Amino acid sequence: MTTLTSKSSAVSNPATTIKIPHFVADERGKYRARTALTEAQIIKAAQVLLSNHICRREPLTSPNQTRAWLQMQYMDLEHEVFACLFLDSQHCVIAHEVLFRGTIDGASVYPREVVKRALQVNAAALMFIHNHPSGALYPSKADRIITDSLKQALSLIDVRTLDHFIVSKMGVYSFAEHGFI
Picture 1: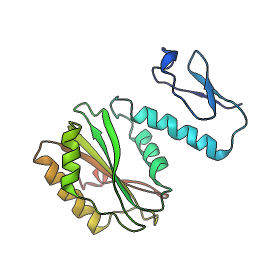
Picture 2: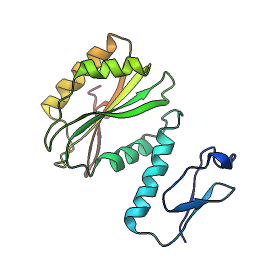
Picture 3: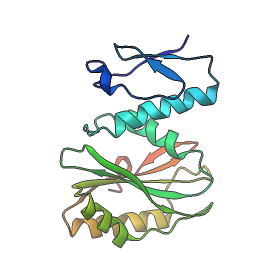
Picture 4: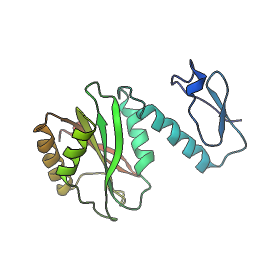
């Protein structure tokens, strides 16, 4: 039997138990599978749990958990997307949104639209995410240029750029960890 435990407020308040596909929760916040599960169903359940931990208005404090969530969200897409994690001043997630969708080898990103959305959600900081369907893990020259453009545009409205992640099946690359932010 597969059992999961959520460390969210669901443990102390069963009314807020997370709904996880193919699982049922008891009054202590422990989950068990309704029936035998396929690998795909287990992965989907893990995605739901990770999304809840990332998007529940708590500070992002675990780089490894953030990386795992990003990789699960974006590594299998067959087209490029550009997304943002909009954060408040305490680095709690306000919103996670895919802003641009591209083709197999690129996506057009418009700084004006990113700035506009940051103002709409009252973000104090942002993290950018985009995937490389090709599997390449390192940034292209175009990736560096758009990151600099976005960082400059957001700085004009006092919104900090914390990181830009590239996600592929090979892993997750952080601009900040490599000194590009």
